[in-house]
Length: 201
Image 1 (cartoon, rainbow, N blue to C red):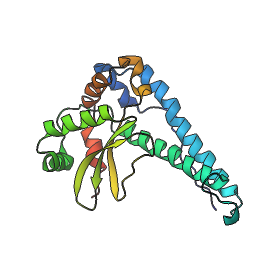
Image 2 (cartoon, rainbow, N blue to C red):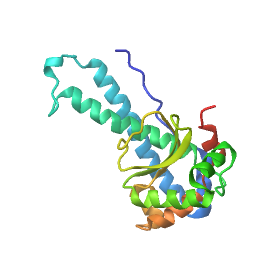
Image 3 (cartoon, rainbow, N blue to C red):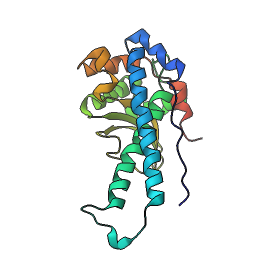
Image 4 (cartoon, one colour):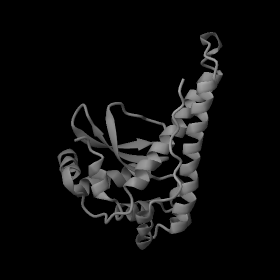
């Protein structure tokens, strides 16, 4: 099996640091970078291990086996990498009301931007790890999803548009345990152009 490695991020995109204006600090992002890099490195490590693994169905086992352990942990590492790619790609904007085609989709699904915002905030408070806005290719609609871990509750045939990290590492330095305040700040720095660009054309 040929190994294809992901690119390990070397820095936070500079525009992301503009979140300091709403209280999400540079230090938080710099610490967060280490976790993002960790997911990329573990993705590559597991890909290499899988490529070197002797594939023998007789050694596979659902209680424990090398292939099970690697493939289960691979989803956590790779999804963690992807989630953070989208998180940082869509952060550092002007926030406010959504624009572009995604605005139309939000209004169609939720009735208004304010209704969507209330739902997204509640989703983030109710989640253990992530809140996602995703586009459903089957129905042509958007929906706010909960992700309790990097790899929990995946939904097939969707495109991830917005990923809000609500693990404590994303906000504790700035807001301590006040997650709702963190979400309020986050909503003020979404880059809606970047979110809209993720929609399938």
